[in-house]
Amino acid sequence: MSIARNCLMGLVLAAAGLFGGLDRAKASDPALIEAAKKEGQVIWYTSFVENQLARPLAAAFEKKYPGIKVQIVPGTATDLLLKLLGEARAGGVRGDVHHGGSSLWPLLKADAIEKYIPDAAKDYPDNLKDKDGLWTADALYFLVAAVNTDMVSPGDEPKTYDDLLDPKWKGKIAWTNQMTQGGAAGFIGTILTAMGEEKGMAYLRKLADQKLINVPSNQRVVLDQVIAGEYPIAIATFNNHSVLSAAKGAPVKWLKLEPVTNTLDTVMLLKGPHRNAGKLFIDYSLSEEGQKVVREAGYIPANPKVAAKVPELKPQEGKFKVQVLTPNMVEEGLPKWVAVYNELFK
Image (cartoon, rainbow, N blue to C red):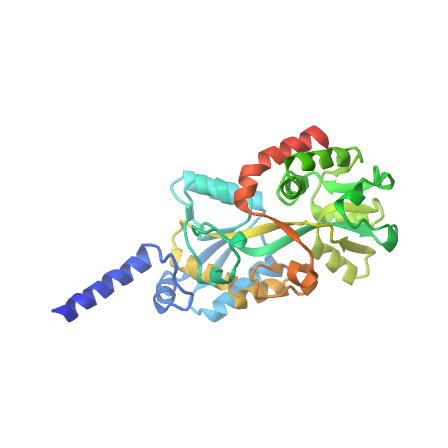
């Protein structure tokens, strides 16, 4: 009788794990793998460059888990968010996995996100994951100052944020006018968080007197304009973009003005039709194996055990301090950062 009862309890617990959440299931858990294979596919809404990262990561996952296909739904972050919100209003999202720092809160408010704590997340520091399982960082971005090395000699390079206030830089500093965590707003957030409200605002007012050049485009375009010699210096550019361009002979160098703004690309489980396959895909993408695919694609892996392709791009190896802007900080602070931009820099 006790044997039968134990067997019954085992079946109940297994069912609860498969259909009630698998909140802490391991990627190697045979029950999770079997459930994912029965679903047969995972639908991934992604704004990663398709041929650079999305397809290689999908192919690596399919090779590890035969029988589970990854359907890539590509698009810009904004377009995919609108698509998912439309699906949520129509009765339920079709996607199983999505990513992106700016998508989290709108999707959460639309009841489109399933809480899930990936097994691989145990290796991640607290500021790279949500304790309740809403998100985990899958790639890192470091927003830095960059200079045209033909126009700025090593002795003239700014070493601190205060150096940007030198009169010689007036009217010569460019940045993107994007009001995102990875644009001007994120830079403002870093200054206010690192320096404190009073000192931060005092600094930003002085920086505004430098007459920064607002470029109506993204960080890559701003950096390309620095490389072309239109401006000698820019702030809020991605450090990996400078490294990639310098490797091709471009006259560009990124600077370690501390703290460097650290923004996150976060992966999240959606309330889609293939949640077990979605969990398995998230586990794989965050694992050392999956993060090496992220690295080889030229992105900066979030897993602390996986170095960047150019190790110095990450703070530990590059020996620079960062200010991490988590999704929670961005959700709370972004309206204020935008308001400061509109007041001082617009």
